[in-house]
Image (tube, rainbow, N blue to C red; front, top):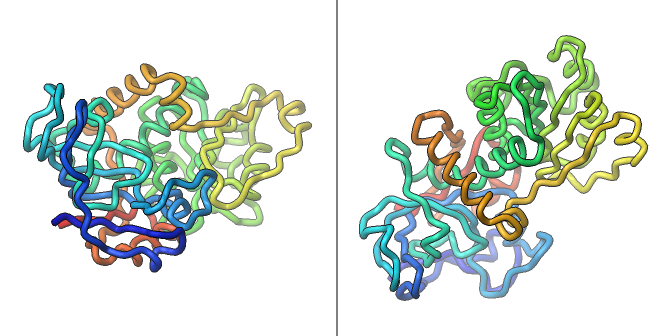
Length: 325
């Protein structure tokens, strides 16, 4: 029987257990997927700990990104065949060897992309695309400052930003992470946490102010980054693992700049057609070899606690992947 990582109460990864789990046959409009790889994000672990902004019902199987093979089709599903390589996302139910998913939310893996890459692709790249194209309305030639540039969404923002014709400045805390950002196409890097960080940003942009900030970090970094913006600048709030910032409202006024929230779940609910078009677009670009997710480490399913703890630490230069085989 297939297995899953299941928590009967919220807590640290060690409180979860690897148990037998069969999701059953797919219903109408669903497919059953033999999951081969799953991405592990900070939010996945935060949710598993019961510390995210919403708490799913128990028992709970963590995870939000997967890649695998179609092994059964529900009634009315005609756009997939048994054996198709697919990937997608969901809110839980992912750290398992099999899962049921709505066929309308599943995509075929582009040729040449392995399961591990596909597992960490959709959420990160759709978030970066939505943030820069829909919310920031980025224009070629503008400057993009990416915080947490070696993290999942940060690295995706570097690659998407370069594809859109932006000058990308990547902020990361270690030399290894800054090197990863450069490998993703960053034009310049700055050291997160450095006493002269704002001077580094200014120098990296030739003394000019920044047009767009991509902020998946939060905490003290948010106000510092907002202060780098110029007239009409846009600060994209993606997440806040470093804490929820308290930005003084005089700053947007004085800067004539905007603070803009980016949330994939809300986008999918409020504008499903736009969200679907984004998914198709980033998939198409991945198939053309434009985007390549950075993977820092791969763990077998039995090592889930170590993998989840590493993802939660934020120290990896790239994504952490759980492989089911």
